[in-house]
Length: 216
Ligand code: MG
Ligand code: ZN
Image (cartoon, rainbow, N blue to C red; front, side, top):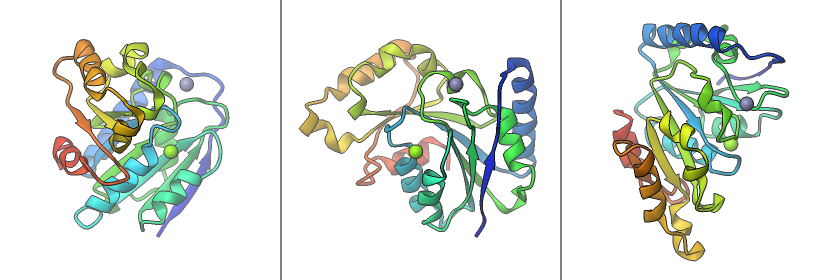
């Protein structure tokens, strides 16, 4: 197993430079036949458990690398590593999102020929990660129903830039008296074609459907 931690100090973000790095990441993934996914969502939306559930479902069929972005610590990477998955932790210091250059830097010493799937867990934040493409195949936006009913209406741009929406922690809907259908129609309001999956990463409900939705 290999579990790295890379610290990055980023003071300025240049969208132009990001675009170039995103293209080169995409080329690199393509060259190795890798399907890469950017998992975005607020702190506490359940990104790590969601990735753990996907890894449980798919590690028999695919060689997986997980890249975790956090300001500090490798708590999330260690959780995923406990499933026997290789990980790279990116510690961004003060940056509240990952950008394509950070991903490129973190992967520069990684032998990508060993992997078929890369899950990138972005920094917990529903706002600026959407502004920085990482060169992935699909962007997955996670909405945990514990975050309240207005995540979609308050973050329309993030929803617009997503390829897949996962409404997570669906097992809590009843106890929270949460109107899931209303949240789904908020998504439909922003983009009527966006695939929406109702998931409990905890019980595994809906994980199968997400796997199909990712084309895997
Ligand atoms: Mg996490
Ligand atoms: Zn940010």
